Every structure is written in C-alpha cells, then in structure tokens.
Length: 151
Image (cartoon, rainbow, N blue to C red; front, side):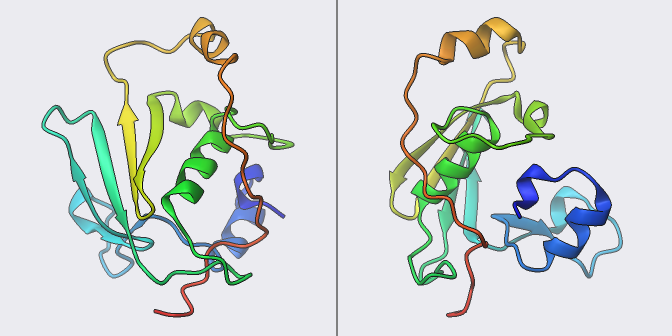
C-alpha cells in the first residue's frame, strides 16, 4: 500500500500513523496555522530572500524500515514521483495537481533538499510536455516511511 496513491479518508487516516513528513502541524495547537508547523523529518527549514525556494535540513540518524539512511535523495525521489517526473510511476496519483507550483527539488548535500517554487508562471499542459524529455534519477521504492527508531 502506498499512502501517496490513496485518495479517500478511509484509507489515508489509518495509514498516517506509520508515515513521517518533513514538517507537520503541531497536534497540540487547536488550529492549523503557519506558526504551528513543527519539524518531523526536517530538522529545520529556511526560505531564500525571494521566497521562491525552501531548503530543508534533514535530521541525522533517521533510517528506513530496512536500515538504510534517509537522505535528501529520498525527498527528491518522493517529489519526482508525486509530479510524475520519475522513471517509476504511481498506479494512481490523486494529488498531482496540488504540486503544480513546485518547479524542482534539488539535493545540495546528503541531508539538504531544496524545493524551488514557480509562482510567477502559470501551469499548463505544455509545461509538463516540455519536461517529459528529462530523465529523472531512479528511485528506490520503499513500502514504509523512514522509521525514526534512533530518535
């Protein structure tokens, strides 16, 4: 099962307890607001001066269920899959349109991932066609989220 391929609350909610995110809303705050975002797999994050790129510094020591380290390459792989840019494809991708303003994810170090946004240009089908010739790096498909067993 991949929580990323599911769209209904009846499948997503029960599975959420076994998955991690880069950041989450603090569950002790009654309303989800920007100030209530707290780290999960990301130790910290910062915006560039133009507010078009967000860099996540990832926690050290986080491992997948199979013992492999969680790295920025895994973050890139996930976003590439979500946007349909990876070699591997989801069977169903119900949230692809949510990320149309995400231009690219780059890896600057094993524990730093940079997400570049593209608010200045609209999204259209031609944009996706223009990118179809690019080759995405191969992704490792894993059945579970990184387990924070060492935390």
